[in-house]
Length: 235
Image (tube, rainbow, N blue to C red):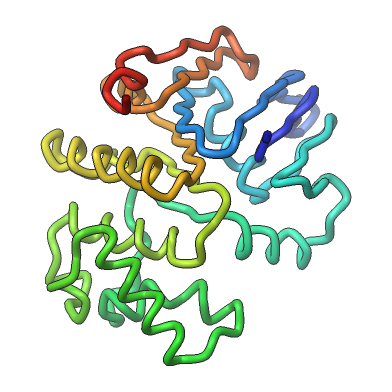
């Protein structure tokens, strides 16, 4: 089953009298449980593609279905609900609230779902245990290392059991060793939860954790590589 189905996705931006085509007729299918990496040079359209997948931006042309929902004609409120119900986001700079401890940071998307306090706490604790932070639940972000902060961000992204986890340069603010640990965690979550993961990265070593590597150039898919190293590791 395709959780992401894109046909002829085009995205244009108007800058003065100039029209910039960030994406040009992109066709993409991603199945449930896949781990896909998107790569490309600066200006290739990879971040724009991730924003469209994440319903943070709309395409100018083409059609996009997310988990069977046609998002092209949705209102902003409907898109917000889709993001909350079906998607989890992990960013390069963690985006944690410094005045809240780990549990309270993880609870945030559940508040918008209207889940009661006790249930939120239980779900958040379980998410933090899954990412290996059982003993850091009451720590503030400033009391955590960069890798631990990113694990809190991942727990926040998976706490609502999303269909798709989207990661934008998830290791960009981390050293190489910590980055490798985060990617191993992604692989574990992909396998154990069967969660679909789509990440944007400029690092080949990070991209190789994906089972497919989609390479963009000038807003178009240049080629798709099947990563046999990842397949062998997961087998």
